[in-house]
Structure formats: C-alpha cells, structure tokens
Length: 306
Ligand SMILES: [Zn+2]
Image (cartoon, rainbow, N blue to C red):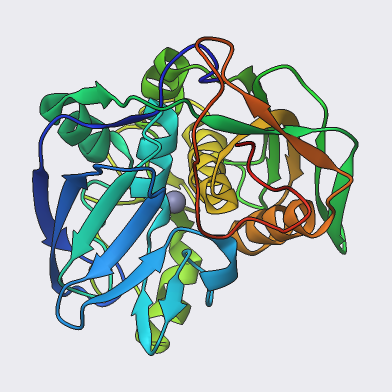
C-alpha cells in the first residue's frame, strides 16, 4: 500500500476534541509530529504514561479496541489508528487527556480531514513493511480470519447479521490511500436497536446517538440516510485497518475476515507476530537501505536491517 514513499509524519501539530461513545466524557487529542522513528505512540498527558500502538498493549476489545499500560486504559483507539494507517502515517505521538478517544461522527473521516489539514511530511527514513510469507489463520467458532501472501495490502470482509437491512455484506479491495479515503474512511460505526438497551444496562454507549452511529431497527436504519448501501461492512474494514496498525508496521498481505470483530482482528495480529516463519521485513522500493525503524515491539527473530 505505501511502498513507494518515505516514512511519514504530520507537518505540524493538530488538535481535535470530542466526547467518547461509551463514557460520554470530553477528550482532547493532539497529534504531534514525530522527529524520529518512534512508530505510533499514545501519550496519556494526565499521567505521562506512553503506550505504543502495539498488540502487546491491547486490553479489552469487546466493543472497541483499547490499549492499556501501567494502569492507564485508552479506549476506542481504532478509528484514529485507521485514519493514520489509511493515509500512511508511520510515526506520530498522540497526546490524549482522557481515557476514551472522541467518537466524533462515528467514522474515521474527521481524523482524515484533521490529518490532511495539518499536512503529511515525508521523513528522511524509509518505512519497513511486514511481508507475509505463508498463510496464518485464526478461528473462533464460525468466525475466522486469514492472512496470506500478497503484493500490497488487500482486504476481503464478510459480515452476516440477522437484521435484513444489514444481512450478508461482502467487500474486497486492494487498499490505496485514495480508496481508503473515498470508500472506507466515511463509513460510520453501527449497532442494532435491540443492542442498545443491553449496552446501556452495562453503562456503555452513554454518548451514543444518531449523530455518531448508524442504528438499524426492525424497519431499517433510524438515521435519515446511509453513506453507502453497504456502510456496515465498510466500517468493519475501516476498523480492521486500524487494528492492523497494532502490528507496528504496514502489512503486505491479503487479509480475509469472516464475521470478525476487534477481538479477532487483534488475535490475527498477535498470531502473525508469534510466527516468525510467516513473515519477513520488506524495504521501501525507493532509496538507499533504510535506517533503524520501529525500535519497540519487534520480535527478536526479525532484527532490523542495519
Ligand atoms: Zn469502529
């Protein structure tokens, strides 16, 4: 997906505030350009604790993806991570003053706009890619995911819902920045009307409304309109792009997902990292040999090329 470019960060800091979907608490996010190859790292400003966007720090991910370290838990990180991956941002510090990132309109689009307004700056280093060498599969009952070798990043996603207005949706695409922005970034989070009471009874979705989620009722979406006919599966693909950021580097492979969700996305990322024979580092197609990248979170079986 990002093979012919330098590693990238933002041109200048960018700030966005909003409320979390589940806790409905205010949170301000400042995206700070990286000066070195730091990967994507969250900084919880009230405690000063840094949490790298890496699968080893993933906490609960039943409804959204959360990262936890040293008693700090950051919830709903996936839409921002998705926008960063979709636009090819490799290195960035994300300052947050709360524990749940703003839900905004339920899509990655406000993050995409923020990043594009700040500008994307190439760094004097080359990105690395994790190139898949052989299939890796994870399965939980009839839910499964598989990654296999591919030149670039290709995604295929299928969801099956009881609600006839979602039903079975399948989409497959080779990801580019343009495709991400046009076809995935705008897709909003969704739920079934019948799930809302259950979530509220558990103290969740306190900030949920038709302004930040598509709600499918028995007679169709309660929102005025959908952004795409298959907005639901596109949102799942957008989520997947964000969860794949937890690998710590861009992926080169064909990722298939069947009725998956955050937990299985993360399980696949962990299964890839756990099998050093399943992947290798690939370098950018341009430029000289890369310098050191991704100092944190790399398995010893794959030392960084000097
Ligand atoms: Zn989502």
